[in-house]
Length: 142
Image (tube, rainbow, N blue to C red; front, side, top):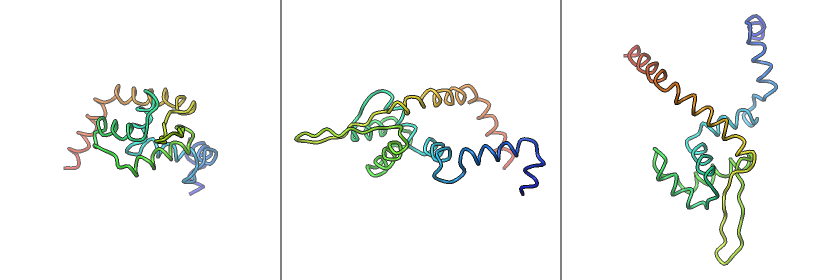
């Protein structure tokens, strides 16, 4: 296969970029794209754009805003931990009689949002073309 890569224009550069960016499952390039493409993380980031929230408030907001309905407590915890691990979300524990944790975007998370906005704008601008392509594809499959 290496021979084919060197023979096709652009494939060698793509292979080099993938090697540089990381092609292992836990490399940031792959993990961030996977995280942004999962069922909940993008919505969590967009919600946190509007402020700092407790776990229960995020869960409630997802239930109200998400097309899929509610998110389980466990899944929300896993998604928040993943976003925190990637440096996009922070949590602050507030010691008190009833201790609680607030979640917020980090500087890195805020820096990512304009890129997400740009991608969402592209999807909006091309929504009709995407729908047309889907209809043509589906009709050809029948």
